[in-house]
Structure formats: structure tokens, C-alpha cells
Length: 186
Length: 368
Image 1 (tube, one colour):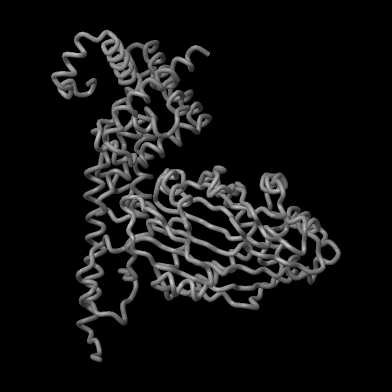
Image 2 (image 1 turned 180 degrees about the vertical axis):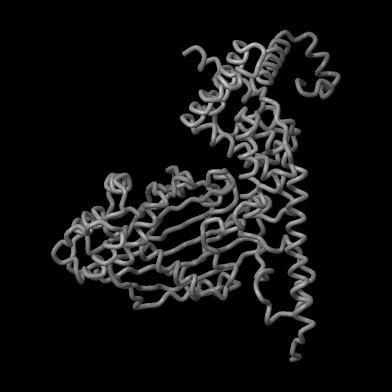
């Protein structure tokens, strides 16, 4: 059995440093490629760019803690987690309503037509409330597709066959419309 | 047809031209799609990827998801496993307190109880209220085959049917023979521990001082699916050759994709003290939140119910039926992971992984 010299240990340390560096590089590449899309999904759910970025960063931090950035499933995982995390936040109704109350006058002041802006905000609130009432899967299909993901990407994110997406999407669209109508008729 | 008008075949298109029903359905669907596209309009999002990346880098250093490292990744850390064993005993002790029929407690079913971080800290402090000694030490071992795991634990290792796509068929086994712990209540230690919280300790019921609880945990066997690597780039490699590490990439370091566990249900016996006394005493201790106390008291038939603590900030729980018996399904808040726990024929089973809940349930129902 041969003893290991200092050179061997140095080489081992270098190798480890390379692995750590390549992990960090892979994560940075993944972040740059996917961040806008992940934030876009969250924004589609929350209709709030600031909170959407908050969700996107939380999703990336969680991913980095759990998985290797070079994993094949990375984009699909991020898309799904973005939709679920944002939907979970949306369901925290009290906090959201409080924020919107604070935000509405501020946004209204920035626009040319304050009345129109208030209407837009109210529409968004109703739609998001309807989205929060829907089951996770149809809600996720809607927001992922509306965020520009292809049928194949939506299927990967939700772990279903691409062939099912068309049907899921049509049903989800009908369900959201029904929920919005229900919310406004009360 | 709505998203891609060219996708429809020639014969379908000819049918569509003449079919009023199809035209009406298409019109409804197109209308839904247009409405939803308008409804889901969102304010413009301008991202600054570089500064967002800096923000993420400033986040606290990566820590294992549940606050402790999975011992399977570091087979050498036996002390960690012993610590986990002690934690399991503490859970069993708390469970015991709610059993109506002492001196015997053996759970036959499971129920979720919502807990907060503060509750966990209070329950951990219970360890200070007496002395824990092992009369049979926990001796967990990592083995490579189901036969070895069976030899150690004496349990038939559960067989998983069809694995979901993406889950590795590589299995690492951990097995543990029966372990027995004795917890002795000590009035003086309890007083000193309560003093730390700054609140007066409720009066110790007669007989609790010196009462002994004997807790038997295991035997148990755990199957871990995934391409685990024992190579840890952060640890000092003093034994292996450096060339093996040179060929390994970052993807070699993975968390388990699926974990299946089976254990004999914990058994608790006690001396001197009745369950009711113990329940009232523990629930009146400083630090136990009224919400937790109320939800524990609300559990039906506590003498045979294993309580599954669910940290409400991080996980969700629901009641499900697994293999014909009631179980508790758990999910993390991102929807990325799921688990299920149930008790059948005196054995506690758990299946968990970074999978959808439906997949985890399917695996649980297919266990043999």
C-alpha cells in the first residue's frame, strides 16, 4: 500500500474545488437561462412584479439547496415550483388583499385615467381570487401556458403526457371562466 | 385547433365545415381561450437577472432541507443516527402522554397534528425534564442488499412495485434492530429546566417524580432509492484515491429520490403514573401553545393513535386511505415533495420522495 504524498492531497483539493466551481457555474447558467421565465410564471399568477421576483428567487434558492443545476429536470422543476409557490402565496388571501388596498391608490395615481386603473386592479383581483379557488393542476396548466411555455414544457413541468395538455387546458379555461363568473355574480 | 389551426387533418377539416355541433364547440372553446388570455393579463415584468442573481447568492448558505443531514449520505456519522433515535424516542414519549390505557401504548393508526417551530422547541425541552438512558442501544447499519437488511432487522423488506419514471432503481438499505430507552422523570431537573423559560412549573402530580417510561423503538428498515454518492466534495478525503473524484461531476451528489421505511410500531410501558396524569402535566408545561394542547386533546382514541407532527409553515397534510387503512399524506409547500405514513398489522410504514403525491400514494398502495 503506497502512502499518499502532499501532491496527491493538493490534486484532490483542486479536484474538489473544480467540482464546487462547476456546480456554481452550472447554477449561474441555469439562473440566467430560466430566471425571467420563472419570474414571469409567478407574475402571471400574482399580477405583482415585485412579489413575483421574490417568489422566483425563493424557488431558485430552494432548488439550489436540493438539486444539482445540471440535472435534466431542472427547468421543469423550476416552472412547477414557481406556479405552486405563487399559487400558495395567492391563497394567503388576507395578506394579498391588504397589500392591494395599499397599492391601488398608488397605481391609480400613476395612470392617466385613475378610474380605468382602479377597474383594472379590481378585475385582476377577481381573476386572481378565482385562480386561488381552483385546484392546483388546472390553475398551473393555465398559468404555465399563459406564461409562454410550450405544450411539451407544460407537460414536463406537471409530469403528464403532452397529449393530455390540450384537454387539460380547455377544461381549465372553462373552469376559470366559471369561477370568475361565480365570483362576480355574488 | 385553437392554439395551432394547421394541426387539423384534411378529413377533419371537411367534417368541421359541415358539422354545426363541432363548430359550436370550437367557438365555445375559442371564446374561453380568448377570455382567459385577457383575464390572465399581468402587469409588465422587467427583470434584472444580474442583480437578482446577486440577491440569491446573498441568501444564507445551503442547509439540508429539514435542518439535519440525511445520515445515509454520511454512513460514518453514527452519532447523528443515535441522535435521531433519541428524537424518535422523545416523540414516542409525548405520544405516550396521550394514551388512555397506560401502562401500554401501541399505535394502530395515524393522525396529523399541526405544530409550529416554537412548539418543536418546547417539546425538545421536554428532554430536560428527566434522564434518558438506553438499555438497548440503537445500532443502525448501512447495508447493500435486502437480505442483509432482513438479517439485521428481522423484518421483511417491503418491495416496491413499478417505480415512477426518473426514479433510480439503485437501492441502499439501512437497518436497525430493536432499541429500548428508559426515560426517568426527575422533579429537580424539570424545575431547573422550567426556570430557564422564566415561567413557574406546574405542580408535579404525585408519583410522576421518578416515574419510568420504557420505550421500545424498531426494529426498522429503510430503503433509499437514488444514485447516492458517498463522495462529499466538502469533506477531507484521507482514504480514497483522488483519481476517482476526478471523474465525478456535480450530478454525482444527489439526494434520495424515494425513501421507503418500515418499523415495528413503538411500544411504551410505564410505572407509577397514569396517562391522564402525564397528559395533563405535559400540556400544562410552560412553552406548550394552547393551540397545540387543544389539537392534541381533540385527537380521537389517542391510546392507539400515532401523532404525526406537521410543521405548518413548511408542509401540508391530509387524511388518505392506504392499503385499506387510514394514513396521513404530507406535502411540502412547493408541491415538489410528498410522503405518506400509515400503520398496518402493527407496523409503521412511510413512503416519501421528490414526487407527486399521487405517485407516492401509488407506490404506497403497491408495496408488498
